[in-house]
Image 1 (tube, rainbow, N blue to C red):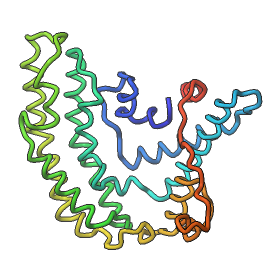
Image 2 (image 1 turned 30 degrees about the horizontal axis):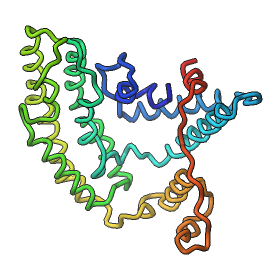
Image 3 (image 1 turned 135 degrees about the horizontal axis):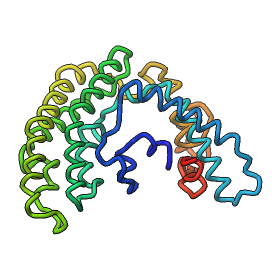
Image 4 (image 1 turned 60 degrees about the vertical axis):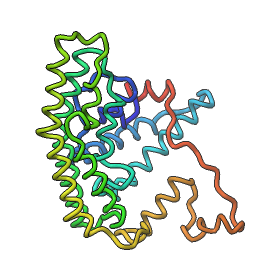
Amino acid sequence: MGIRTAFRPRVRNGAGDKRYNDRLSDHSPEFYKSDLEQKRQFLSRFEAIDPTGFLRQDALSLALMIRDLRQEIEGARFKSWEMPVNQMGGPHLNLPDLVSLTPFNTVTDYENYITRLHQIPRVFDQATANMRQGMKEGLMPPKYLLEKVAVETEDLAAQTGDTSPFAKPVKEFPASVPPAERERLREAVLSVVREQIVPAYQRFAAFTRNEYAPKGRTDPGVWSLPDGAARYRFAIRRITTRTGLPTRSMNWDSGRLPKPKLRCSWSRTNLASKIWQA
């Protein structure tokens, strides 16, 4: 399993690993600190491997794994977790995806899902704390995007009862769930939606609209962030594999520079899986 799946139950869930189906990921500062240390340890193990005799695909997989870990370790200095939301992602949009990632075949599946729903307020609390720290450090997304986040969150907060996306699994049950259990599970889900999830969305929407969005940056360019030039160079190197200055990379469309070949940043092979599990 990759390092992301080792510490993120939601990702494990999507990969078919059911062992952590009753958990949501930790987004505390302590988690990110320990995650960085784990990545350093894994990098040392990967760098110690001699690829001599490897199949070409396995050697490539190893090289890409090392490259990816090095970049993630380097990028940690920019504290992306302190800017966890935009109009395309964040806990407000990602959490409803649990429905599509979670199996609903047994009573245990439903009970695991309910346990996860109880953790949603904690996820929002951690995101809010990280965003407040980002405000102090000048790490803010563009204001006009944060205004969209507030609207998105308010729209989801307004979907209550059976209309909530979190209630979708109890609208219809598979035949494998006994009829005698269905009403209990349905009421448990709707109770969490009513008493915990909707209030959590309302609090997050109010925070985003009233405190966070007004302090969003007015210059949308990443260069306007602290260490903006370094962030820009890092992003270009990670996405394109180029090491030149941003101004040179921006000349691709002029025809004066060849466009670099893009490479996959992650490869999952049997070799990688075995190493991660070792």
